[in-house]
Image (cartoon, rainbow, N blue to C red; front, top):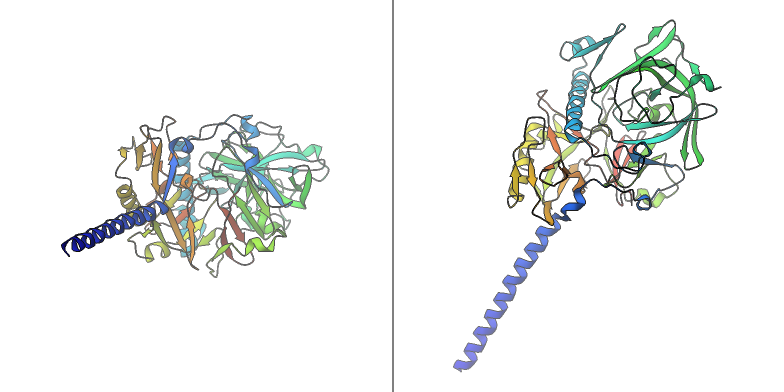
Length: 481
């Protein structure tokens, strides 16, 4: 009898031990499911191009290349380490400009009212605002008849498409020949009284010719508004032709675009590519690694099944349409736990998705909550103090580690849409020896209501859909691979 009691007690003890072990195993598994377990070396920028890693969805898709990576013909197959301090500086200049535009839109102020609050430039008779550009991805298109190739940065926060042109009064260095209007039979300068001299340009004239001016954190582009034949190519085949297409022929350019010839504006203003063409739907995927390529697709593909898996969030409507792709963010989570931030902290200041911004900029209260939660989850790793205010303030020394565990970060949007970030949309390597690896978010306090700006770093490896007619933005599975 006593022996039976001992055996039963021992059996119960074993069951209890197994139960505790299973519980801890389940807890550990749950924790890991909310984390990225990565080799530290995989966070480094690639030095070799992996051409076969990208799945281009259709004939309507064009290859997108990072200007920093080894896939870029500008770099001739050699990876260029991004200067993240400089990118962050440009991001902050751009954020200041975007916030000022949003402030103007909300308060329906005039340009004169806005200029009283913001640093201004004067060119001829037109004052403009400083706009930082840290865009890292470009496509190659053809302009003119016969066609001349130009490389254009993709920017959903800009309107006019422009490229450097001959004869150039001042041009930054580029790797390919300047576009030469005199060699094209379809080039035509736009007169001031023409309907093609869109309000976006302010209708400025130089000897009866329509003139544009665009200002960026790294300089400016000023030139002639013209029409030309635009051909977008997929490999050797023409996938899209627009003639006439309104663009800017830049003859006075001080902006530094690291060898790229110009910029393609994809915002919602009348002069943008999306407004000028019938392609009222486009999607893109920027690669998670600079060592591979992505794509942009103009229009919808024939694969209708694909769109069933895209999760859309609405673009908020207003009597006066914003030039940006506005979104409604409802919350953020780290490692599966929502940040302790009221929903009004996201919705009151508003939010936009902007491919021309690299690092997502958060309202101060949201950033503080994210920083606190991230530090707690990363407490086992050694933190690095920032060298100055120009750097990220949440950095770690990973030199002693082969693998690290990074908590997953998610962003939630109206409509029940959840966006889980790739690890390379979470961390960025500032030093190649891995002594400074930082959380890739920033904050701005230029205005009382600081909008959230969702940048391209957090969107890397994710297929992003812009439905101009349906007034919505979507995120699709599968990424670029």
